[in-house]
Image (cartoon, rainbow, N blue to C red; front, side, top):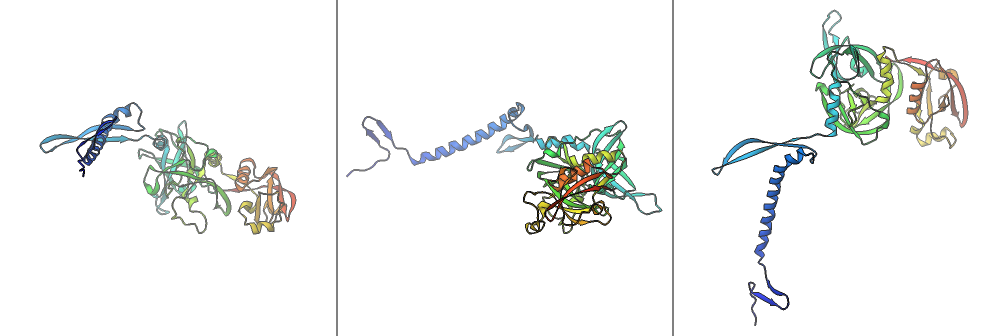
Length: 411
């Protein structure tokens, strides 16, 4: 009978000898790995500042002595690691923040008293400096009803502002202030090239907390929502973002990653519409800067916004349910247009013979692909008093009518 000795050496022909290892050696591997990890961490703490200075790390790391202690009779030193983050977002915020200001609405306490008290606060953007004056764009509802308007700069200094013009329909207003304390002017971007999912940064004064920054993405570049002003209703084109936009953000900047203003935030637009739940999160709206720029230009000159008017209520054909679309008896080739839902008495549309149920497909030869394309073309290229040619379908047949555009002022 043979006995097995785990410590003996076996003679293996042509291969030398083999010593069987004790299971206890496994603990040695564990401790070796543990010591290696500790050494790796220590090396990182030592060399991280050097790598940061060389630009290898995407952030800045500095170390400094925080204090000393005595453990077990031996002196030890604890080091504090400071991480300075530099990103596209922080750069964009630093670029535009000095041009974002607070706009204060002041009203008289009573008719006989000449004292003004703060009635509300919103945000604004300094977008232009020309000689002794600088210009601020904000929301119309921020300055609505104000007896006096003040602008609070980034250093908390307040300056008087003059309201040059307002547009209630697109919720925009332009103010003029002295250039003396203006240190920075915001740069306008291009809202036409925005993409869903790209970063969006909102800067303003929500609930009076000045200079607040929220970050999100562009949720939609092609959103329309109903807006009413001066007994008129339109579908306003807006940008949708999940960056938080709250009361006080109104008139502030929606910024892209390059620090350019791509939209004017509006909490009023966000709460427009019957049955809208204003407590929802992740849905904010801003006026696209490409839509706002021509309005801003007119308001800056002190002019009122006089828009051409058809005198109809319309809805985009794409928004009409399929069962109702079939009742319009449109040819299969017609995929877009505006469905007339109501015609105002005495309006240009009424005089031209338009009726509810008609589907407008072009105006002055410009094909209508959507409500946005129609309103953009009409408010940019057409003028009140101009006679245009309207093409529309009625019960499947194409008709043409001449229409002289009316006018509507929103201020």
